Image (tube, each protein chain N blue to C red):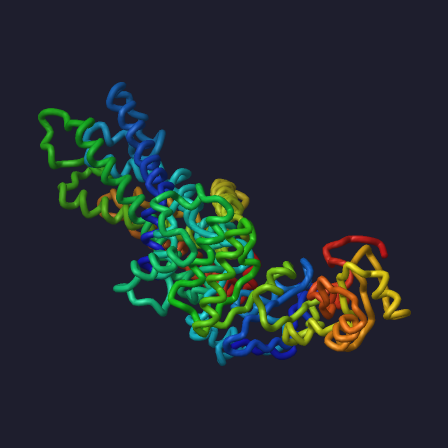
Length: 302
Length: 273
């Protein structure tokens, strides 16, 4: 669905995006991560033909961008940074105007499409209020509705849950998961690790314009070789595993052990009672922080 | 896309407020003239306002003469300056472009909607002025009502008068087309609609200053505003076509060059708002 090679963008002397090779396959839920200012938005804008690349190639829906951007974008829905709408018009009029402006939607079914999209994002009862009276969360939902119109095959979403409350975030995630089950590819750009972790199957991490990681989420969250053990008999366990306990905090022990199943078996045989025993996995946060270091909008001397 | 843009223009309250204000100014002038019956002496005040007292049917042309130097250019510069920069500053430009709407197509649609505004505004001013003029300035008893004295002293029949008023409407609209092209070009350069509108006005003020400056007489013929007032010639008998023709040509040249620049800039520009 998306494939870039050597994608580079230079603004004057600043190298915003440097030799990025993205690969997003059909049906993926791709999480595009990176600290603020790492070049995520510039990359997204290049994918959508808004910003022209200094060098490199972009293939979107199998077509070169920007040369055939028009036919490629017909099947793409997008939310780019903040949502935007005409403040003096209602939500319905805004969607109608946007739908009428481009290709891919017959006029006959336009009203139906607008209602469906509003329904999907939970705005169907919004009435004729002008958009300028909307809350941030409602604007965000409207932006999402605009992206969902005409059931695009690829959704490119930049920070889609910005300004939503926890229920709203949950709702949006459910909508996206449902669309993905029906075959929609989702490209989600975000600096919120938890959002990507809870939604995406594949992850790419951008750091100062370079793609430093691109892999399956499960591969990134590999076991660390440690096991967390919670037990009412911590002293007994420490005795049994002499030297292997790396850390002890009340009844929680962190044990270095390659095989959690074997460890559980051993402890139970020796009469230790267990509340909980689980292999430690690296969280996405650990992975990303390890790769990227401090946020790049941090301005320091070091 | 053109239909969408026209719809947006018409749904915008600002459009109608602007048109209403443009119609209001000549009406105020007419009321003062009618109440006091004091006309500017011939050769003074706005062009041929003195002739209006004799016959209100001349007032549409006079009204256009009143709004032409300042109010009409301001209105056109604001609308045209908002065309691209307004969408950019509201953030809707990126959503239109990824909808996708081709950049050239968007620019053409914007141009058409600006021209539509121009024609509506000029026509509305003329129509209001006709209604106001014929109500307030009743021809002096004894002179045949359908006969109007033109600027050259000979008389114009009402058919001639209508025809010439239409010509004035077209000429004034065409003069504003140059302004629209400047503002539209600036609108593709900046993300600030106000900046684009003020930039276009700054260029007009510069031009108007240079027109009156003898030292700049060598470039006078090429300034965008130098033939604006040539519409008066359309009321002479026979019509003096020379300046009107030059005016049409100069405005056309400005429009073509600036719209070309606007296209070249807009289609190659990074959209970062």
